Image (cartoon, rainbow over all chains, first blue to last red; front, top):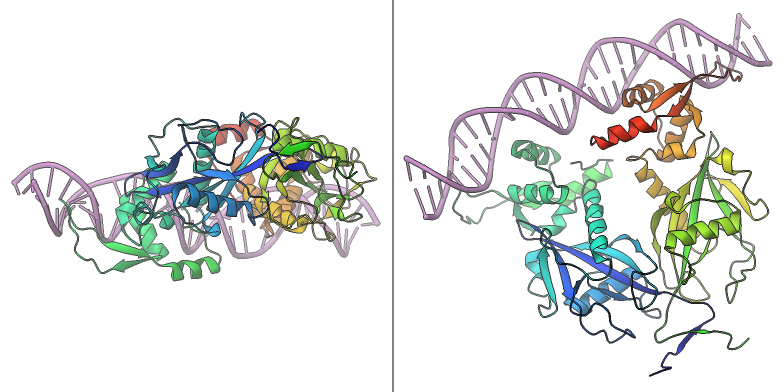
Length: 241
Length: 241
DNA sequence: TCAAAAGTGTTCTCCCTACACCCATGG
DNA sequence: CCATGGGTGTAGGGAGAACACTTTTGA
């Protein structure tokens, strides 16, 4: 095992990984998908065994078309979740010289938004789990920092794009939508103003309520009206919160 | 020369570079600093010799504390310009599998803003030159794409931070400031509204005019009032354009 | 009938926009 | 005195913020 290396370079090269911050929303709280670190078949040594971490892994130099492909591939391998390259948004590069004890590793962090109800079942529960944003365990490497930056990035993006709808089920209530925005932006809105704004934007369509029940008045169900949103955006319009 | 490599890995590693988009402003137009590619002492092969490109170069795995340090170091080596790590903002990762014909190279693009008058003299004119934004030559690799993304990133950032002042000399006129914003945002503002807004923000202080002349009325000189800006920002305030 | 959550409309204020005339300087 | 570019104020409209009561439903 002393000289099992087969890849030779004239100058030192770093290892490159892609890490994924996958956000979900259960109607009440923002959640993040984490994995429990075990043995890594492809790394020469293993670090942080047994700790929680962001899903992610090494760029396959000869195979991954872009680093986003690495993110998608690794997420599927580690959690079972299948997302497309387009679902990932780049968060940034984390390149601190000692961020990995084994060798120089720089990572490109990405985030993705998923409809929790539709993917919870398809995640590999042996290795992966969803954690509430306010109850995140200690993470391996600098993944706490990555998580914070990813969240601030989401917070910024939601001002300009209707990314919130990627987190909600196809059909949702106004209070759910408002609560989601409040969770991400860490503010409180007035119900009436929020409803007025949404009505004014005209990017929601009412859905025939299949009379669901709870211990309270039945809320109206809506669907995101993407065609209208695209038209508005086309005519130089900006969603603001 | 067949087996001069000394760095051995069990799995293939990509090369990693940092590229720099350095913006300047001459009072009239936005400019970008480019270098003419020559022989590269550190690369096993050389590509795009003689073409213009963004300054940048390889991460030194054992030396560069972060990728931003690579950017700062390479910029100095290639253009003579000394900037600090804090002057660089990350633009994004460009990782297309064939973006470099020699080997797999992923690059982390950065941008920086400089006060042109103060740095023009200290740039190494043999290898580097400033180009107007509207007159950029064809660039090596995917540097055209990087340039476009960096610009759109600047355009976004200027909405939230007073980055414009990093491009202007310490003392400037209101029309200069307005023209800069117009160049970056690619819009036109009404002079009076622009002045009103600036007066309202109260982030400029008038400077005793040392009576400079041109073929016209002498404009009032201003200085960026950073203390006031920081106070405003502290109390949850946002610069808008 | 009570508690819990959802729906709804109006007023006020502030900021953004549109807009035109006079002033200083150099040639 | 003319051309060029710089400085200045106000009125109107639209969007965001503040604000309270009624409705539905299950317990």
